[in-house]
Length: 123
Length: 111
Image (tube, rainbow over all chains, first blue to last red; front, side, top):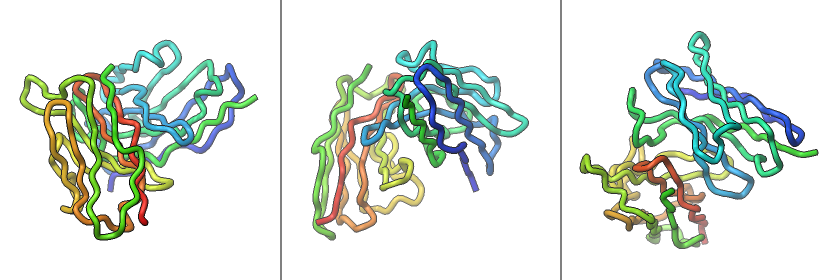
């Protein structure tokens, strides 16, 4: 069965960076684009960007350009999301989410989600 | 960016009664390929979102038939024909015709 298992909660100081992992299993890792979505406490959902696990190409929401880097390791079927220059407003649960349709980048929806990783930014 | 506006913000429903959630987009979600890229998710307490409806009206695998989606262009509706206790949570609409944005969410609780 498809599973996306994320790394554990993190506490970071303002200005630091955080790297969250998402390990995929139960399907062909390189066949499905992966997205990152975050959710601030008590708030809605915000799309951050997409990575192609096959070639590694990425596209980021404008809001996060210059601060976010998404990478992947095909040997371990893991995608990573690194966010730098953290500020208190980055406190949120970060989710990886798999695109529903294989090999399709555009107009995504998400059928499987990781359990979420809480990142707390506090001095 | 396309803005997605959901109403109401919250809904309290008696079990067995229907519920309806509206989602309006700031631009048409109808693509030149003929598809409308509007989706509905349910986020149960303490869980990630789960896909309910794709492309306006198609139920995702395993979603009960009491859930239905309708609409076109910029106006969309999610209906639950008979609310059950397990339906509590926050419902989000999402568009992916242009990048990707979510509505603000509608919290559904049981009376």
